[in-house]
Amino acid sequence: MNVVMLGPPGAGKGTQAVRLAEIYGIPHISTGDIFRENVREGTELGRRAREYMERGELVPDELVIEIVADRLKREDCRNGFILDGFPRTVAQADALKAMLAGEVRALDHVVNVEVPAEVLVKRISGRRTCRECGTNYNVHFEQEEVGEACRECGGQIYQREDDLEETVRRRLREYEAKTAPLIEYYRDEGLLRRVDGDAPPEEVLASIRRVLEGGGESG
Ligand code: AP5
Image (cartoon, rainbow, N blue to C red; front, side):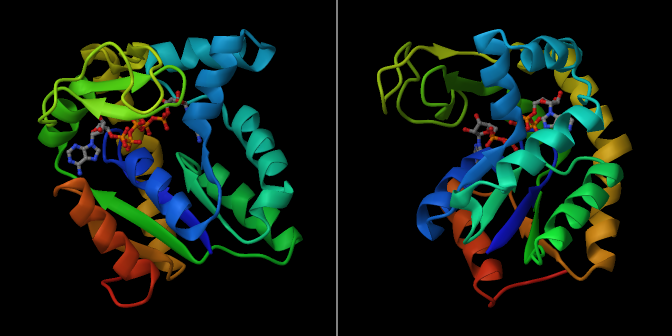
């Protein structure tokens, strides 16, 4: 199953993609995670991506497209993948279509996770992330206190640099200008599956599974 997770920053794409990858036994490919890892390791790619990420802007298409093309060629993508954070522009969507066509593959579903803007800001400002395993927590929504150590692996919990308020606003503007047009793009292709993301994570997961497994709302 070849799936794209679409939606604004903070919609819960990453949270759900991790679970879906486990359930369906296919890799979760997050371009944001790939960039953050490269920034942490101080690679040339990380150095180039960092300036855009810190400003809340999209990294240029040519940097992203090559990374995804390489990643999708790996053996573990043979039975499918969950793309999270890619494509984010029409040029990226066109490039993805060409990459898959070249290997006689195609997307099966584009899941658009819909969440009202005011909820997005609260979610992002409350997000805390594990530096080691990437697990996300939220100081606003979780019953258990989010401490300094990850409950999964004991790694250090931190707040993403691009989750500061001004940067979040810029990311939301970037989303509206450059990524939201993909909703029409994929609707026209008959691939769009709309899911209400403004519900507890377990409910959102169940809605996504329904649409992926054929019983739910489309379009
Ligand atoms: P990226 O890492 O992809 O960031 P994003 O799209 O802004 O997405 P987020 O990670 O903020 O949100 P999410 O939807 O995954 O939500 P999450 O599950 O974490 O990209 C970062 C940067 O990299 C970009 O700004 C850009 O510079 C660059 N980049 C990446 N890809 C690129 C591309 N293709 N082209 C160009 N540049 C690119 O959830 C958010 C919070 O809410 C968490 O705390 C979570 O615990 C909580 N939460 C989740 N679901 C629920 C729920 N149902 N109820 C309550 N809380 C919830």
